[in-house]
Length: 164
Image 1 (spheres, rainbow, N blue to C red):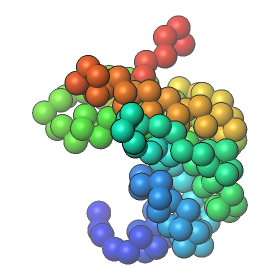
Image 2: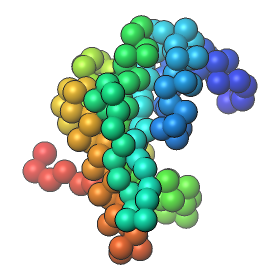
Image 3: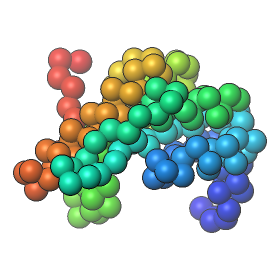
């Protein structure tokens, strides 16, 4: 692996995961659109705000952050996934496995299959089809509920889909 500017790294990658604060999402993707053309782009950004009552969902004009990404990246295959994974759990290398499912939304079957397979490479996780891109709003918003659960119970809860 080698570092570089966002445009250089995006241009060299086959698949790009977008994990930035929502406030900078649109500006970054507009800038990277040429470098991301022809690539699978996995968006895991959540439109989250905070106030004295806790976390809440921010409105996104396109319907969801993932739909915003698709609008800004018309020459890319945009997939929404990895919204519900705890950053703390991902960073904790002492844990041999993670526990949960990755809800995957998108409109391109091959891109979604690739992202589901990517999720399955992480020990303890699996990718689960969660619908078309238009369902991204609900998937993103569920993260806010998990933040509330995690704060109340001092844990790093995730999502597990049963019966599939």
